[in-house]
Image 1 (spheres, rainbow, N blue to C red):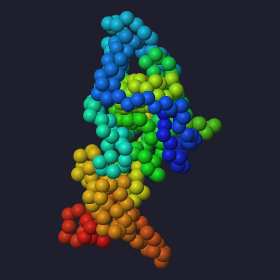
Image 2 (image 1 turned 90 degrees about the vertical axis):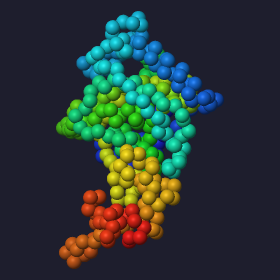
Image 3 (image 1 turned 60 degrees about the vertical axis):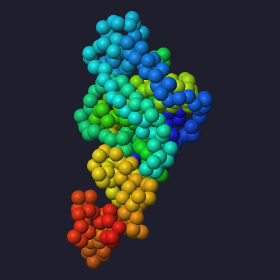
Image 4 (image 1 turned 90 degrees about the horizontal axis):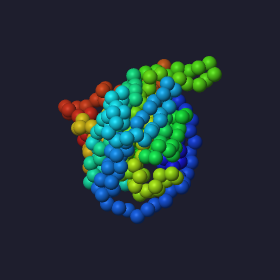
Length: 319
């Protein structure tokens, strides 16, 4: 797992425990032009899809087999799990500032197969998610596997569990979490109807020039991912779930910077820059048996400033 994840160690979140390890087995090869690498990668991926069959058995094991290109049962042609794709940009970051997006001009095509849609909830890329996976190279060999499951999140902060590569993170929006989770008498958990997707990832959305064990630099890879659960995160621990900090409602959490200090609201402890933390501004007191106790307003109930139209934690003239 340490070849796949960059860990920030925190307490495990609800379902499972996972251990924190150092990154190792990493070899950095000279950096090449990203568009050139992608053009090579997508040719390899499409050739693989057109000359390989896939079988998912009754125990949910996956087998890839090389077959004659043009056959009706290639991954490209089969209809049991229709091949789909989305076009995405690399959402990796060099910093957590508004302008910290990695410099990558490529528009990537992510091919994927939905093995099971899942019966639960959709996730977004900044959620904390609990997943299981098997990773393959294009030679059909497994390079990494996690059957237990682990929590990951994005972006990396002191409150975030392990982070994962961009292609893995972005494809999770195409499936849903498990319908439910039940516990057996022996304490083991059963994930009922989780989402499952197989994604074919160009190296620009993976490890790019960082060679891993059994993954040479610039190699496209495959992940078979099961999405079990998701939790909306509070990345800056300001009392507001990050999903509520997309002020302009455009789905981009990085372009909302109310106080123009370079830090997006969902990572900013003081969203309006008035010297009072967001948590302070959304806190009120209630009387519980003669003892005054601090409570946080639910998002929908955060008051606006007097005669104002925006919530008080976003208006520096309102305390």
